[in-house]
Image (tube, rainbow, N blue to C red; front, side, top):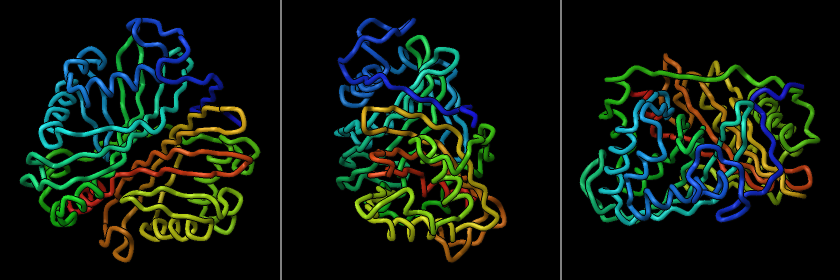
Length: 333
């Protein structure tokens, strides 16, 4: 078994918690979890957008959907646009799963549940005045007080639906992939013994490779129980092993010639429980009978970040976030 791109930490960090060695960071940050939670609050809730210049590299690389975005100016512009559209946005930090890598740089996977009121126009249309909620997960690589690379998944499909817009019609009008071709970066697939599920990291790897990739859905009870919940996009809570199996099958049925691989696994072991963040992806040609409702000649690329709570050898909760609207934009490019 190789541990390439699999990182395990046992130190328990929280806001204002243990002092961690943070070379090059400002002294006000106690540890990497503290850093992530504080800068998120400063930027979004205190609206101190200048903090972005202090905590993001000028040439930051952001992966979102099937595209890459370069430069801190675009981060600032996007933040200001969102604050204009949703000025009362509140962000509940649900989890920060962290690690260090072989170079001593830090990695964080931050799951956020946001609530907001649409008080200004958006790229979709005029202000609706509607209150919405949505989940985001941001994976960041950080060194010397600066985020230099980020993988972002947001449930934009649920945002559109709550605002009252037709996602397909919006995707047809979207010019993201008309003006910029798809640009995808993935790591070499992790190689690990899929049957080695006695450790939490092996359980997650095996779920994605054995159940999702190899379609061994009959084995799903090895991973979930009747008390398990998969928190899916669009505010769907899928409870129990049979319902979770049906949900996974519905997504798999949406693709042909599908490729599924794990990009990274980050694990925080906490006594009898473990929190894990897995960054993975699905790519394949969409089927009309599937969740996107269209046959495609070209591949669609769907990056996913999942967070898991694991206890007694089973997943108690999974939070699975991907951008269904971005997938529609690729399909209607």
